[in-house]
Length: 329
Image (cartoon, rainbow, N blue to C red; front, side, top):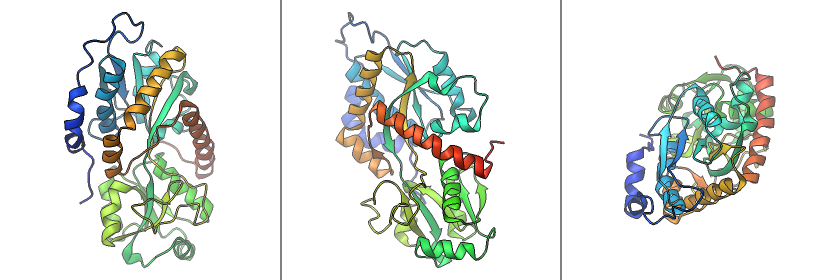
């Protein structure tokens, strides 16, 4: 069974080092202009997922840093836009921010009639990157990317790949791969990743792009074979798996990134304090190690770097959405 990320098992491993910071500092200076009340962090998805776990791991550390309680509030729905609309409507006073996922750079491309503009937000930091692996069933008999492409071209439209849903980063990553490699693979959207893995293991699917935590044990056991990793370099955990760039497809990207954003018109000093508080929190050694166990790599980028990456992703995905005619149903 894949190693499932749950709020309970991740928090339990770090509770000893973090519980002491769960209560805001009693000695916070009440004279400070900001913050002088609790800070709300809105989650675009439900409780228990890896983004939710990350937000709750960091909340007590950021509370300690800022001297005010950080409260995580889940507002799932409409591919994250319910949470985004709530932040857009909140006062630009630094007391409401949000976590973002890989859909952050995609959502406006797929839903042009949003009740807000993306420039209403400022990205503060891309905290983590979740590399993905392009995996195939071992019984397919394919050992390299070149072999997969050659075999797929011999039977256009007969092989299929699975993703966690239409318009997700892994779906669009699969479409990017199809365009770059010139192969015709049928897309099969799923509601849950375990079902994708099950169908891969039975060769009912011939390919999928999966998070490390979702497939590492099957790659280690030889039931699945990883042909490429979507990351800037090879991962120490999979030293023999080349990057997409190494196998000739540098434009293919399908990682699961988590970050934080806030209203763009929030005062600059407040944005700077929040950015630094979260970047420092996620860099703590115990956090870095625990997140690595679940396939997440801490990057803690600056606001400027996060903004640049999002712009690059939007340009990349805009083209594939147009060519592949991807639409949310």
